[in-house]
Length: 75
Image 1 (cartoon, rainbow, N blue to C red):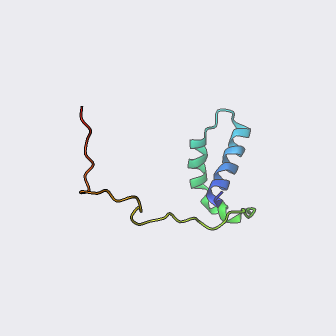
Image 2: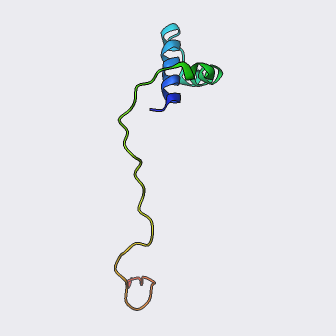
Image 3: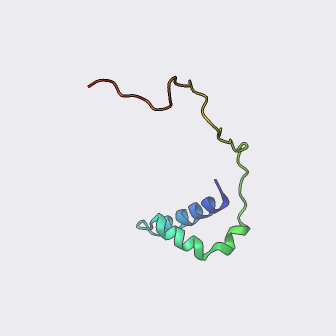
């Protein structure tokens, strides 16, 4: 999780404890107003590995003989 997600989750848990009708959208608004506190939070490191990249380029499928358009069968 990112530091922002952890911060919003903390705000949500605090709000839910005091008010059972407290919603996540309220936590987002409150967290936005309390951004200054976010730097003071200590977070635990996550075990995330390096990002995986997607393979790009042309597909290496079989080439069709006699042109590139696929022909329809008889109806």
